Amino acid sequence: MPSREWKRATRRQAWFPGETLILGIGQGYMQSTPLQLAQATALVANKGVWNRPHLAKTVEGERPKDDNPMPDIVLRDPSDWTKVNHGMQQVMHGARGTARKAAVGSQYRIAGKSGTAQVVAIKQGEKYDRSKVQERHRDHALFVGFAPADNPKIVVSVMVENGESGSGVAAPVVRQVMDAWLLDQDGRLKPEYAGPISAEATAREE
Image (cartoon, rainbow, N blue to C red; front, side, top):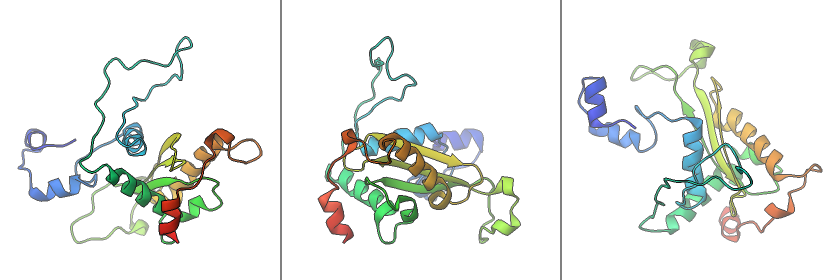
């Protein structure tokens, strides 16, 4: 995460108020790995409860122990977790959701968010024109999501290099991974993941 001190040391420049604004939505000098995006998404899915990622499900029959747990995130208004969850569901299931095509036919509710990572800078006042950009310089496609949205069991983070469209390119990959985890060999939702669709989300969507 960039800061005033970081910019002064690395760029020899002052920090501008506008940089604070764009940093709030993940732009500017912020950098993140797909794993960090998955961790952030898991925090939203778990309403602020930390679960440190680990490679092994069990070690010698026991779940890995976190010897240095992070403190949970507590919001002033806990209902904000529900609002964010609903907004992410609308990305996938709303009538105007940017990734609604990736959720067609889903047997479970998905909460997701698309994004792009700029590879090369565009001059101020210019617009992105893929026909004028070499493929290796095109934006990376990003998508994060969790499911089932009302009882999260899996979080997926995908980056497609030079894929450009998070909703159109990365979201279908997220859906495939979720299907592989949540559905049985016959394509049905596994009983342990079955549950009622959020009544609140359904009512709002209608």
